[in-house]
View 1: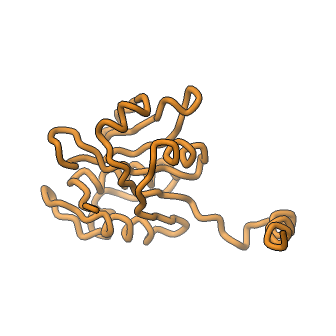
View 2: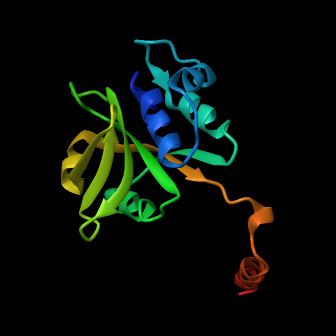
Length: 157
């Protein structure tokens, strides 16, 4: 599996962090992932840089369109998609931030702040399923007694 993100990868990472409420700059994120302008960035570097932010989890995965729409139903999850924009090879990244119209339309942010809504079929035409799932981690100490009790109950079943 080719996991090389395009130079736009850090920008999509910045969008992901911003949507999840994490304040940073492109310079800071670029430094954390070791990105040099006009160079390709391995997705592993982007993933590690995103995870270095307190309260953020990032995982490289291969998703189906259905799995993508299911993930985007959670407001604490965004997905960076490695896509084709100007060639037949992966050369761009966008941040998927939501799903609409019975899971048929994906809300994308393609820097600089270009909000787009695309049909899942349109996305499938330029995306091979490689993605970085970025989530807000819930701190254990913030869980209520009710949540802990129900989690323990689920483990016993």
